[in-house]
Length: 331
Figure 1 (tube, rainbow, N blue to C red):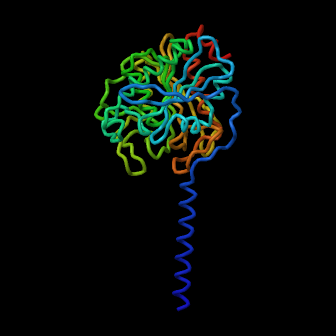
Figure 2 (cartoon, rainbow, N blue to C red):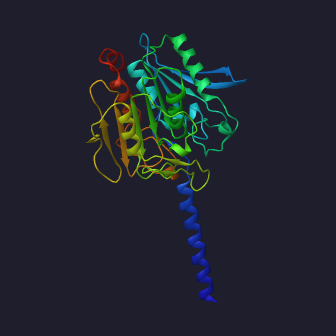
Figure 3 (cartoon, rainbow, N blue to C red):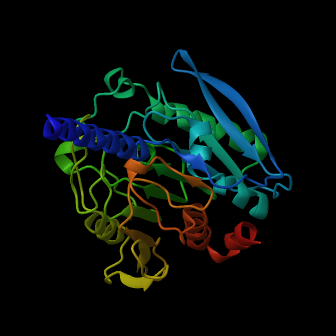
């Protein structure tokens, strides 16, 4: 009897330990520091496609004349305000410093209608025209805020990165560059859109231990569920875009943060007169945007504690502009 009681006690202890470990693993994200912002966030909406769509526009206190516009697209099951949180309000802080606008649109029922054939969320199955929505929204902000048409950038996280690719391939607006975080282009058999054919400054920022978007390419799944089809490997995708940009040289590696359990390196493809391509590989990193202001849920993996992802994205965008335009984005 005593042995049986001890066995039951041991099983109860193991069960409690498993529950505690699971609870820790599934803890929601948490803000690590309060954002010290000087600008204002404006909530507004736009009617398009027979429905009202919503967005947040961050306007810094000192807006530059003819400012740049950075459009930041959220991940699945999120919205524009959620993207501000997921980035640790880092893009807003950069806008305060450099005087550009940041636009955070909401997807349809938490998703964007990207190009992946295998995706089954409502934005795709209902054929939501997000290209038209985003194009109209960008034109509205451009007109109302006198945005420089040569300085419109789109960055996206996960599903938002896939939507940034679709905007680059099918949108009629001249984009100065795109950045994909925790996202890789779909393989040809999983791509339901016109492929990106034009040269474009492109940054990919992916974790090598991403549990959703595999760094080396392959099937995208949400922890075993929600099949999104196959994507290219991060290095192959960056090299293919470099070739599209007319760059024949191999990408040059460069250490970005100090080596450790999680660290980052940058690989750069560049040539005179060609839009640059960069791949930021977060070694040991997960499905997230590394930044110092917010810790995502632990089930998404870990970030590089020394990498400021929003700052790295803005550095890439501002340096990819012609020299005459770089002044307004870096001062």
